Image (cartoon, rainbow, N blue to C red; front, side, top):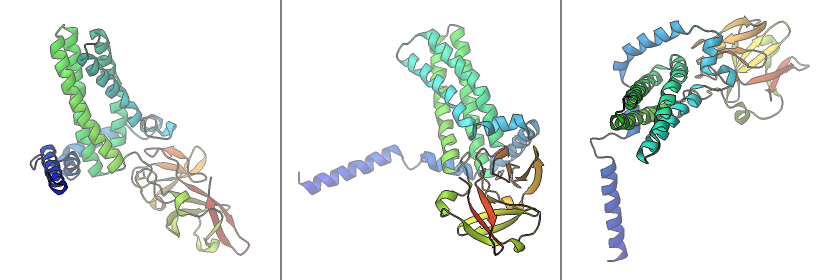
Amino acid sequence: MSVSAARRSVSAARRRLGQTRWPGKVPRPVALAERIERAHALDRPIRALSGTVVRALPAGQRTDALHGVPFGQPAHPALVRLPLGCWTSAVLLDLFRGSERASRLLVAAGVLATVPAAATGLADWSALHRDQQRVGLVHLCAQGAAGTMFCGSLLARLAGRHGYGKVLSVAGLACASGGAYLGGHLALRLGAGASHADQVSHLSELGWHDLCTLESLPQRRPVRRQLGYLSLLVYRTSDSVYVLSDRCAHLGGPLHQGRIVTERGAECVTCPWHGSTFRLSDGRVVHGPATARQPSFETRVSGDGFVQLRPRP
Ligand code: FES
């Protein structure tokens, strides 16, 4: 066979392989996830569930802990590893004829670990955009189905029906893996959980920059100013000028449209979208759902009355 004929047959085989993997009628997983993003039929149950979650979790320290504010990042991604890890290990033990007692223990530990994972996930989900919530709802249903199957598996194993328990475990793991894919789509494609604040260190040069004249800033009213590519929230008091990056770290809300409040003795800004609260002096998160510190700037006033700023290290 000539080289070109061999190449043609390899490309034909690749095309056939591609068609075998994704035949026309089976959508690729990412296409399915994108369809879920646009599935308006989910909006009614989302409104009902989201309202219930918001009522059950009013703003405060408990809700902040569920969002992961004390840890500086969302708690949910770390906690979901526990049930998934336990359940995967249990199925592997079943497949390779490991100890039934160990499998049972892992299935039970996974079921218990779903409680904190679900609580943190629901708290985060209730403060997302609607397209993210649609994907999140299907993710939640898949993980709920997985949890139910593993509960059934545990009961079957305890009743001595080991074969049935193993089948339920495999089905549960398949569901959990589908749900985990949607969780990945939510976090990595739709940016849930990542910081949406501007990457100040990449967008601004080091050193001091002129912003505007002090005279042009109103007293005690947050305003937006631009420094190159950066949008900034600027708030002037009688003796200071506070500057934070304007795009909220949670999902990019406009902080200059937020309310100025006093929390724990410090002046803070509350995001108009989901209520994240940041200390004006250094961008520290006082209340979630944001978990990442808001980029902040040191300021000074030059001799000719210009407000100058530089990113706070
Ligand atoms: S965008 Fe959600 S709290 Fe700011």
